[in-house]
Length: 144
Length: 144
DNA sequence: AGACTTATCTTGACTCATTCAAAATAAGCA
DNA sequence: TGCTTATTTTGAATGAGTCAAGATAAGTCT
Image (cartoon, rainbow over all chains, first blue to last red; front, side, top):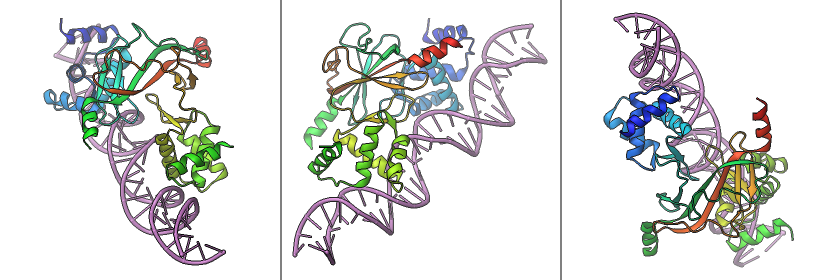
């Protein structure tokens, strides 16, 4: 079974239509991990030149709400997307160039999910973003 | 010594001028924890009607870069500010109404700062955002 | 205190990721 | 095959945040 078949299942289960733009968007996100909207649009249009940016935005939002993809948006950066979902992993972002990498949490399966004092909030997710400098930028900054 | 005196020290140490707009902005942030830019601007203008939004944006960015205040910007929300800095605390955000509350990390002093695999990144900060539903929205959603 | 230098502020235009809205299209059903 | 309406296209609009040029005032030097 291909990932496209998987998408059909998910969409049908939610009574959503399986359309060419949607399939193309999911494929583009899968092929471009951590890609931003612009990247996704370009990738989609390589095979389907007529797809509008709005269709891409709609599809991305839809998939994110269904939990098929995940949106990441570190401070000061535009939205990025990935198909790796459901495993509670986190991200490192380079302060210098914005590069993004996946990080499994150090503290086991579902870490940091318990706040010391939750103020009565019913917490359902802990989002962790590590900020730092990527190897390339470390070298570059050292040379200056 | 007032918090304003503290600001003067910090700014002078960085060879920055102590101006009325800056003092007013810091006071506004202190008086409006988790306030957004619009809130800060309004607060500043109650005492200094002539201060421009640009001056507020500049001051906020300056203070944040000096570590005097901290900028928080959860996905899908505009920037918010707080004067509580240097204690590595985190935040809970309500998915329904956007309310924000402080949370001390459960795992001790500087938690989650070690990623399992940092991909060679030199990590200097771990930002944690808990997502959930605040008490008010829990009650409201139950009633529907 | 008065004059000077230039960091900071005011003003107002501008950016650009994202959203809104209306008419056109095509997915899935009868 | 035709119908219904969810999606898409098209094109304009939004709005937080930024840019730039001239005006102002903080800190300094005399």
